[in-house]
Length: 278
Ligand SMILES: Nc1ncnc2c1ncn2[C@@H]1O[C@H](COP(=O)(O)OP(=O)(O)OP(=O)(O)O)[C@@H](O)[C@H]1O
Ligand SMILES: [Mg+2]
Picture: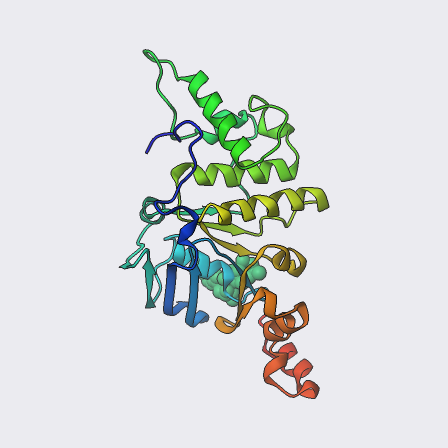
């Protein structure tokens, strides 16, 4: 898998007409770690051209679910269907090869290398003899960032001198280099200020508009409502709500997260207080 062609998008065969075509379906997913039942009978779907937010309290099972999709953990039970076929997803490289790209919170960029070197790390272009084709990589890096409207001073400055939002944007752009169909973002705005958050949310929308499926894990419901088409709420390892962003509000989401919607209001506090693991 080489670099993107000139002006190259991770273009989908059918472009943005893919919207509403199911990309990922998890059914009856369960996962136990020793005494902890992290996931129980979880259902989860993502369409092409859709942003789905995965929300829930600490320990609800969000990261575990994402790790099942990115091939880090095999589930004890249940099936993962991706792009129309049931998949084993027995390793991260298998998930990557299928077109599932995950951007973890710690980003995995090299601070001392410049933007071009980071984008092409592990997929360097050969030039003449032992040399890398720096000119091509630089041009294509600039084209990619321009297409995604990622504004940075230069593609030749080290990651260390970029702002948090610019770094996050480069990490997301890097994830699109392998032409994924699904991009998973774990807390992409957690460390960012307001303008930087805006920049990253705009980038997420652009990926969606290019026909990719996007899963966003976030504790920030303002960001979730700014970007998500749909929300899946996990509580204590179970899917407790499946909501369209346009048909719900933060209050309803918080109620689902804490279990307040399933109990009498008077009981809600004692039940959620006693039931949470942390
Ligand atoms: N590798 C592991 N070994 C043992 N227990 C684990 C492991 N990974 C997760 N767990 C447990 O599974 C449950 C779900 O954890 P998970 O990390 O998926 O939650 P989360 O929703 O991502 O929470 P947070 O919002 O705090 O990141 C927790 O009780 C956690 O302690
Ligand atoms: Mg987590």
